[in-house]
Image (cartoon, rainbow, N blue to C red):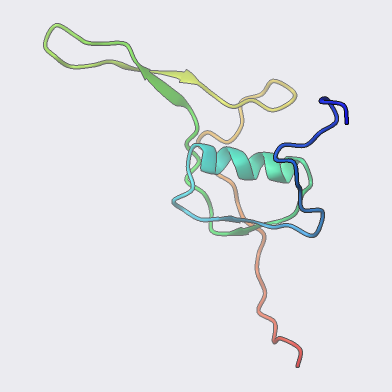
Length: 101
């Protein structure tokens, strides 16, 4: 098999998928469900996410021993627009069903 047509990991699940989220989902926990939804892989289920994805890096140390953290890394859509930060991801509403017997 050609190295450019393989999947990583080398096994994938082709069935129905959902992505579980909640209010403690942040950073990559916000990016993954965003991309999951954009790819049309399935619904998001759970609670609204935190909505914080801008990464910081230390630019210190300062003379007084402190450190400066600079917002430096953000997530953009395919159109080049910033996404997720401060907006959060909102889940699909759930409905209770009774299992079949």
